[in-house]
Length: 333
Length: 210
Image (cartoon, rainbow over all chains, first blue to last red; front, side, top):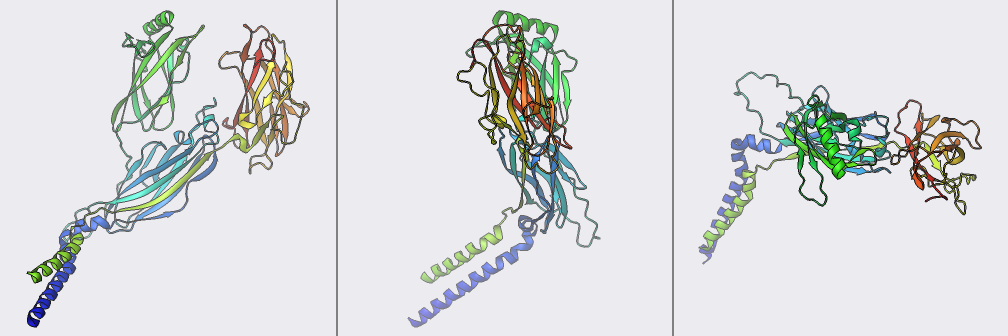
């Protein structure tokens, strides 16, 4: 019995030793085969030095505030760098305006590319691949555009916004290198920061209250988050109440063909005035005379880097005592 | 059998422990956070508007609501919430209403902001399209040195006066609410962002109106 027990103990001890050897040796033996992936999976690390943080009080239209951030990939492998907006907290002023809707963000790599767009635009920017050991400096600038003297900025008086950003690297597989006997060469320059492309441009189309027939046209204000080209179409429809089906009165040639296509730069708001054709004016007048209400459905086709999309606005013209006013316009995306 | 089972158990445990090291392909993200805070400017950082009930110095003699009984001050509230109801002025050929409200520069003013220049302008009622105010002036307390603009150093106080004229206005018992805009400019900033818009109600009808 004693010999049997001793033999069992020896077997058990041998099994434990064997298992321990396997466990210890496994990573060491697997690492060469998985080296690229293993390294890519964990070695891209980001170091940041904040030379300044964006902070401004009492910003007025036309003014900007900026801060710079220095970043370095202190890991062993390349990493894809992204700027993520993790939080956007608005505190409206006494007139209810949200400052994030007014501010324009510029992300500029010093010595590299840049991106400009609305602060409330994309949540993430792809800033390209950072090689191991590479350092970059970015300048973030927030601008409060001056939109004129007519009190259009008043809604933003006293409003504030807090933005949290995260600079994130995601490890990627390293670029395949030449054979170990080749002469080392200087690494190619890092690609410049690329603007993010999240589909078609976003158009913010605002149609204020106005007199349409007096001006024989419709004025609106458009903002594209990046440079875009817009073409407008419209139709005139009957405006029944209580969601009844509306009848199309005129489907094309609402606007004069000259000027229905516009190009907008990224960011700032632009005034767009579209003239009505004589026939459209006649149709609107007739319908207003008979029914006191008429609908104009405006379709803006937006094209730009990343694709195209259509933005539709429906405005209702009402007969006033002696004028015809637009109601039902508004800001939406 | 027992020995074999024990050995297999140990082997399984060892393999299980080693597995993550062999199979790991989890992606690793490195992050660094940053924060931005931006606050838009506000005219209240430079200039305060007062009615009689909110005047911190207890100044009296503010304009009253015409035909109100008992008489009540025409202006109520302060700063952004200040509003004026001048009362009834039916077919009026021109009446000056002094000290409708007062304005005072902050003391001390923010660095570089002294002196302030305050300019008063009028805009007609956006609904009726009528303008029952023919004039707005800013003057010293008491009425001297009246003009459409005034220069204020830290702590200086002025009063705003208007002239009402509703002669030949069509209709009866109509409330007109034109707007007095008080725009603040500073050394180095001449934009129109820093402004107060004060609604001024004028009742074109009988009695004091609403």
